[in-house]
Image (cartoon, rainbow, N blue to C red):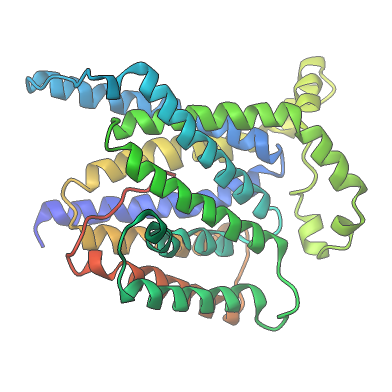
Length: 350
């Protein structure tokens, strides 16, 4: 392996680590702010964090004498339209993921979210795309992994967080397919910044419009009160609705120190998971073989589990570890054609 490829692999490993540990940030952030507010702020920060990379790449293109494509397909109106489409789907995916994290662990969230890797080629069949036997073998491994993660020992019930993560994975699947189509006509970095902005605006609007009702429902719900005591005591149901939080901070009724703990998770989620990790991925995939990129980026769930164990003290049971291993195997098997050199790795947009 040459030095450039090795450096690219290390950058991709760092990218997977940042994304994996991002689940810890998402989970811990809800001890201070609600799920809509957390995602709204972090995705707006993420959108802003990509602007320097966009300007840097465009500057290099100009210096190299390459002209920007100014056709209608790349017009401002088209960019806004495609950003809205991708941003709405992204918004659904991340909100379901964030609510799921109120009930489940970081490791489970990371691996179940990664289920989109297996679902994407299967969903592509309905769009006229072909897939081979590795996809179906990967699906079998992944479903077996889901069983060990969520149902082993209690097949008559499922953790609501795990169920939300599965639905979220469906939206991540739709997101990958939509992005795959939209990037054919739009600068991928501009599309990323645009969809992050749309997602941030929508979720921040949800923070003002919905968090008060959701918080009241949580406080009055008998179902929530009957959940595992460890889930209740975690603080992930104790956040203050965003409108009340803003009023409290402005009026002095809520000291800033009470919510300052959300700053690091939000900054990590915005600048780390989006700005830094996405930049590293763009730079690394110029030199990384597709097989390397596929394998390394599939380790995101492993880093999520590691982060949960080290930071949140969420040590998985042996059945959960078996489930993790099966799901990782399913992801890798489903991407066998890429690993074997038969295709190109699709970039993930976190």
